[in-house]
Amino acid sequence: MKLTQADFQARRDLLAEQMGPHSIAIIETSPVAMRNRDADYKYRTDSSFFYLTGFAEPEAVAVIETGDSVDEYTYSLFCRERDREMEIWNGYRAGVDGAVDDFDADEAYAIDLLDEEIIEKLLDKQKLFYRIGHRAEFDARVAKWIVQANGESRKGTTAPAQLIQLDRIVDEMRLHKDAEEIQLMQIASDISAEAHTRAMQTVKPGMMEYALEAELNYIFGKNGCVPSYNSIVGGGENGCILHYVENNKALKDGDLVLIDAACEYEFYASDITRTFPINGKFSPEQKALYQVVLDAQMAAIDAVRIGNSYKEPHHVAVRILVQGLLDLGIMQGDLEQIIDSESFRQFYMHGTGHWLGMDVHDVGAYKVDGEWRTYQAGMVVTVEPGLYIAPDDESVDPKWRGIGIRIEDDVVATVDGPLVLTKNVVKTIEEIEALMSASHS
Image 1 (spheres, rainbow, N blue to C red):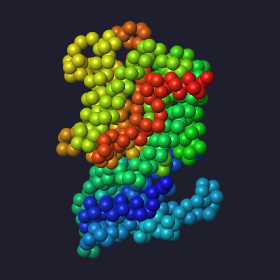
Image 2 (tube, rainbow, N blue to C red; image 1 turned 180 degrees about the vertical axis):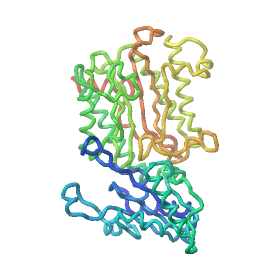
Image 3 (cartoon, rainbow, N blue to C red; image 1 turned 45 degrees about the vertical axis):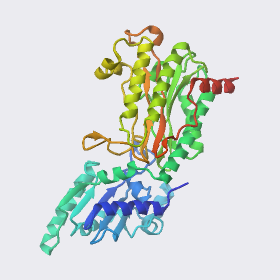
Image 4 (spheres, one colour; image 1 turned 135 degrees about the vertical axis):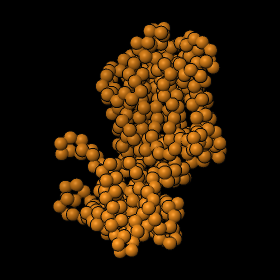
């Protein structure tokens, strides 16, 4: 499925309503990023820009202007013109005609005319909304436009007197997902779950981490997706490195492998982590630690409920993780003192989740008026507790050292309770061992 132009228009309608009369919003897309010399990275449009426009080409700026009434606003799109020679080299462009015909812009202009045309649009507006501080180069252009618009005052016009952070509105809009967005995230989650299942079925001792990553990428690619972030495939002690992306070591018999990898579908991300034995069978120590993390994760998922604090899943997970470490003799002391002092961070040093949406670490404030916000329907969060026993941690019995475990799922807060989008990939010890046994027999 894909979002329609009606979906994007509804978002612009809501933005215009929140802007109020006599206002203007300006939002630019991402620039092309160079990989080396004259080779660029595959282009990916800015999430908020696409959220409002559905337009995925580079070198584009969207402008929304309200007049006396927010019900009647003008949506303009500045984009690249059609250019047959450049299209032969780099692909089709919508052009200004396509911006109107295919992307529902009321007005469209060549991007080269932005500096000229934007001044007239700024005149007699009271408020200017744009993404302050997002890109220094664009900040400088906006500042120049305001100076130029102020210079027109001799003609009896005015320039915006208020400069307002556009992200504060758009980020809040993006935080609350509608049914169509959740459906797209479900598709991304299903594809990612298939990739993790394939990884469990194909891993074997001696395999390189990058070869296992290739199995994931095959599933992503055959479904028309790309990774939503750099994949982590950490065997053994590499699983203790939170953002390990080198993926260039051999996977050893008897070790676990931690895979944190997922894809995005139609600009909507998923985010999954699974940890499993390379040879298909957990050792007693691996099994004990894994069960602690799984218990913490299941309880934390259950805490993603409407009305609960955003932090509740973390608090729930930490308590179970610490009790598990005490029960296994890895930590000593009083449960409450360990939690209050946060000495558990020796083994669990990150939070239990983050917002998820068009970006894998999605936008949206975590606090409102200084307090952790509460879950509302349509918010999507990851739940990803873990335990990491550093290979050189001499305070711990050697049998535990070098074990890194994280389990992560994507969860939607709904009126019926937590909805786990990523449930299609197994995670209990029994399920993992059964799946791997069947595929390796």
